[in-house]
Image (cartoon, rainbow, N blue to C red; front, side, top):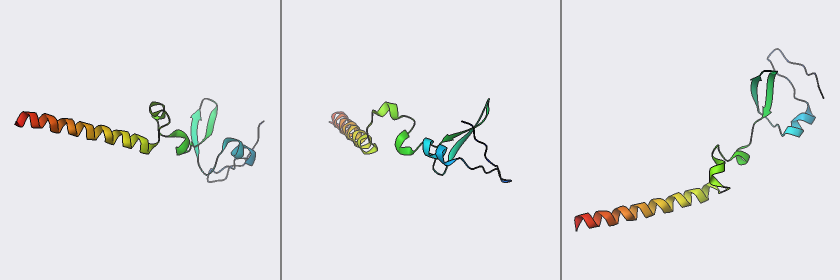
Length: 89
């Protein structure tokens, strides 16, 4: 379905309500230039994206990742302390 919308002098156009609802468009969109013209895409929500590395973290929360990193850091510090004691003894 094709629709014609008006563009104001400031370059503002109204996206029809049914399209905003269908694509989950709230207050911002991504505007891309394409071979066919101008492409408007919904801005992804942060909760949906979970960052660009989400595939590497297999659905873990930020807190879970921080807890794991802290455990690893504590283990590394303990190992360094053990190594330092061996050198000084």
